[in-house]
Every structure is written in C-alpha cells, then in structure tokens.
Length: 323
Image 1 (cartoon, rainbow, N blue to C red):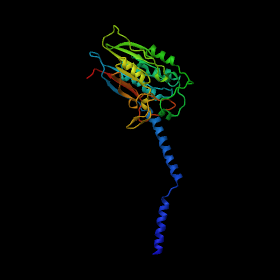
Image 2: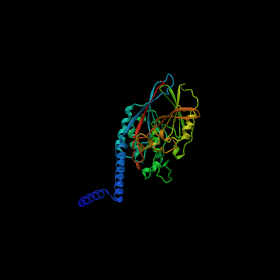
Image 3: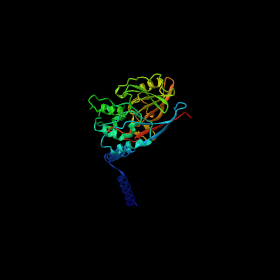
Image 4: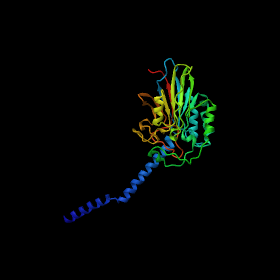
C-alpha cells in the first residue's frame, strides 16, 4: 500500500511538473505571436487593402427645383509615385463613370516624376469641368516616418521638406479648364444651374483664407454653392457653412487610414470628429446644416503605405432634387 501511494504521489508530482513553463519562455512566445500578427496585418494593409480600390456612390438631394440632375466625381489623396502601376490603371478607368464635374481635394503626388503619369492617367477626366484645391503633399514630398505616428494626432509640419513641382501640376490642371480654388471663388453654369464655388489653400499648412462665395450675377437664378478644401478643419467648415454653402467637399483624413473593424477611425489628422473621417455626413454652424462629403482618399504617403479596415476610394455623387 505504501509503495502504491508513493508511486501515485510521484505520478502526480510528475504531471504537475510537466505543465510548468518558465515565464521567460511564455513571454517570448507571446512576443513572437504578437510580432507575427503585426507583420501579417502590415502585409495585408500594404499589399492587399491599400490596393483594393473602390468607388463609393452617394445621392446628394440638393438640386434646385427645375434643375437637371448631374454627377460629381470626387478625387482626393492620390499620393502617386511612379511605381504604382495598379493605381494608374485604376485611375484611368474612372472616366467610365461619366461625371459632369470633377472635384479634386488635393494631395495628388508624392514624387516629382509623378506629374506626367498622373495627367496621363486622368486623361479624359481633364476634359470634364473640374475644380481643385491643393494639399500639403502637392507642395512637398513626404519624409520617412513611423506609420504609427499617424495615430498620435495631427502631423506636425517640417520646414525642411523637399518642394514638389506644384506649379507644373496646377498649371496643367488650369490649362485643361479646371478651376484653381486656392483661396479663390469662381462661377460656372452646368445643365442650367449656376455653380458658385469657393475654396481654400491647405488648412493643414495654415494657408487657408476663406474668400467667400461669389455675389449675385446675371447667370441663371437656380444655383448651388459648393465649398472645397483639402483638410476639413472646423474653422474652415464653419466659415463655409455660415457663408451659405449648400455642400462641402474635403479629403486629407484618409478615412482614418488604420481603422478598427466595427468601430471606425481612431484619428482624422485634424480636428474633425473621428466619426466623420469619411463618407457623406452633415455639418452644422450658426443654425445651418449642410451635407459634408469627406473622401477616404485613393492613396497613402509612400512612407506609411498601409491601410486597415479603410479601403481607398473615389466617390461618385449624383446630385438630384430632394424627394
């Protein structure tokens, strides 16, 4: 009996000993698992999701009575580098949506060599009436950065960044008839509707000076006021709304770029609420509420080329009469 009890005790102790694992080994295994998971997410975000281009479609019921419906294509944050052949091919396909107006909210390039490639990819879209405003990455090339720095809040401005050929880019847009709305206003007629545009230079660089909308004119009485900016800072959205805008366009946020599934954006890289990081929502100022369209953008900085739970997009908005 004593021998049996001794054997039983030894077996029990032996079993307990076999389940014990040194703490250092456990920590190393956990670290390795987290590292592998992080590498997998980065690979997915950079190799798959950042190239998973989409076209988001919206109805914008702001058309004045008697006006003819029209279609807007909203482009933003292309951040083009010459090696992105898949992005260039996808941009070339967007003419098929047959827009009546193109609104470009900046950050088109990330390399001096990208200008002719971008113009070639846009192709027929440059023959469509269009308006544009600049973003910081139209003016300056990106610099290496920790991708997670984006999650820490609005990115600081570096005075030593390399200047890009923005004059060449903007000149090419203007030569094809697109309106430069950098702290400017202008008016065009589309399908019998007077479109009063006003825009700003990049608020993220603090270059914005709100010009106000055009005044009364002899053009058609039915009209829409369209505010355009790159970075949707509250001060700019407030000024546009108070001044009588019917709709606001912006980009810059990348939709949060790295989002949490079923939650959304963690940051907007400005003072816009995170729940408005992308999509068609609304903005209220001085008792006026107007539609706010923020694009999640088509690209990312080449120094942080990852998206997660936030597909790159172009946006098609069909402007129709209210129901």
